[in-house]
Length: 502
Ligand code: HEM
Image 1 (cartoon, protein in one colour):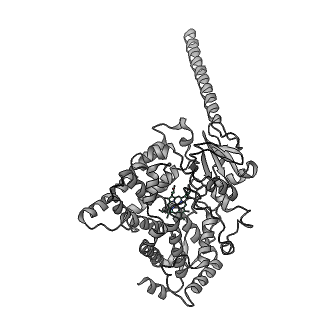
Image 2 (tube, rainbow, N blue to C red; image 1 turned 90 degrees about the vertical axis):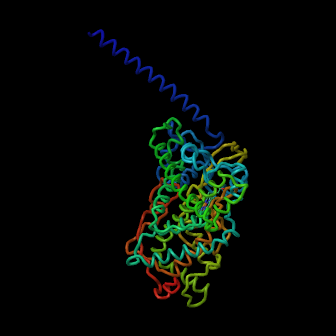
Image 3 (cartoon, rainbow, N blue to C red; image 1 turned 30 degrees about the vertical axis):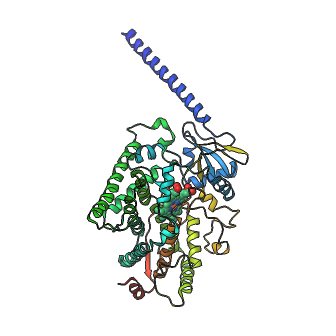
């Protein structure tokens, strides 16, 4: 009997030792390969075995990059699992890399969860597509330039007025503006692309907002561990399961929007919209059609809403800035102006333009912009950046660069009146910078003019509007503020009702 037990012990010890040897060999070869992937010549923090620097950036990654750049230089290297990444952290380095080598940086990296799982059915969006002929054609066919935006003024007018109207109707005029902002932004995108608006009561609103938010976060390499550590990619991993579930939910509402429009086209009652125009063209295939339409659902909503959500909270804490903005609107439109701004007015009121730029700079909602991938080798300060390198722009650090601004941590709109041509990094720069910048700027301008003309914002409790400590979550690709409520007090309720045509 003792012999039998000792035999069993010997065989299980042997199995254990074999397993240990296998794990050790696997680990050693994995680590050797992982380290070999690092980009020669670029310094950076060492990081942990297997996971590299993933654990070091669990707080505000952009802030951590800014701190590392003080030790490792403006352009340093980190490794997310086995993906080496160059991070660009100053305004001058961003100009040299992103503008100086714009063509070399014209692609996006391909990630397992987003590109291979989520996008398998409906395809990718413009901001996530690697460089290709199809992408270039899609970009050309997407009407987001200034002339196209001028034809969207009616939609901008309706959606911003609806927002003001809904704020006026809120009980006691105290509310959390998030849902109203989401509706306004999504309704604009759906009208432009599918020719249909969305109401607060429509169940599609909550569904699209929720799913798109989760999908955007799945694209975040900084938090999606299985993208960076290939050994964690199992078909039954929670991330894979979640990605497949999100894909199915996105496919459902995408099909619903498309089917609604197809029916209207069949009945001959289709509104003029981007999808209907593209459907009527022989040179546009299914892949391009999906690329353009998915872009309208996913690209603009998150950064626009997050910028407005931070800005409203901030303004509620700063009556002095609201008063300056209100007086500048009155000066711009004339003495005792009581209207809601002119939809044809494009960036005419200098202080409002400066206020918007400062909100975009100070909160920099896409702190690490969107990742790029290089298609050509180039050199930076004599160091070679090879083809296929992933590069992050730390837009937050660039916007806070002390070589551009003497007091970058202070919110000061007037800085943009003194230096109107100073660089703003929030929309990215170079070949793949934000294509929606004209639409976004026009939207933000009329929104701020209307908001400030209509209401005084205030909050009886102090809100944390600090761009670092006030964040809802550091894991989000687009950084938003924690939920809050503010009071919307009409400046002149009678005049406002009249301006809204009530
Ligand atoms: C405040 C609002 C917005 C902000 C802060 C913002 C920011 C950004 C950023 C940082 C990028 C990546 C840039 C780069 O890689 O250099 C981007 C790309 C993009 N944005 Fe925006 N965006 C905003 C609104 C919009 C709107 C309203 C649209 C229109 C639908 C839009 C469409 C796009 C598209 C299509 C891309 C991808 C460009 C490409 O990869 O070629 N954005 N945006």
